[in-house]
Length: 218
Image 1: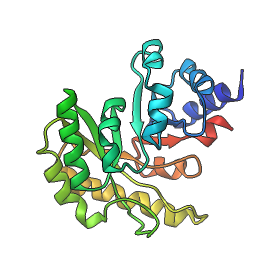
Image 2 (image 1 turned 90 degrees about the vertical axis):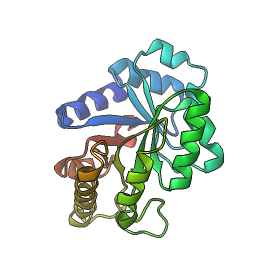
Image 3 (image 1 turned 180 degrees about the horizontal axis):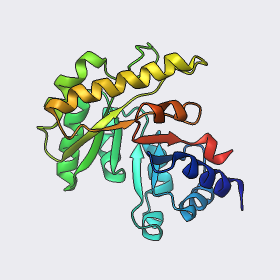
């Protein structure tokens, strides 16, 4: 077995069905991605629309691997909204009403419904994209009124630090915010949090989706 297949097997055993795996395929090419898909991966994440189009745009991987779901997990510029809607099933990094409205219009033009998450900057880091936690409840209520969009949860990134208590606090903060929002917007139920370096802490705080790349491809 290759490292990819062994890494996938070990990771799935560790997760034990507690969360879904989003295999982050940025910086990796189609042959490696195919190896993951052969193992059973069906949710993949990319940071840039251009990479989604380049790797998946011709539809060949979708044909070969039924049920393949493409998530955009990186920051999305409004001018690239139409291509994002065209190629992605889920856009997990929505951080403004303006972007949501643009995605809604593009989805209507293309005759499809796109799932979205709201990206939240729980830690308040200046260099990170995402909504302030206090802005999330109002935006969630506005987004669910937009046609051709399906809000399904919240996403965050923890700081790249060694302090596990602080990292876990960020994940706990998103979980608590989700619980608050879910009370008035029931469809906003899922959490996407945790990456290769901190997914175990995210699991402890109830993450539904783990965005893992380097641990799979190591």
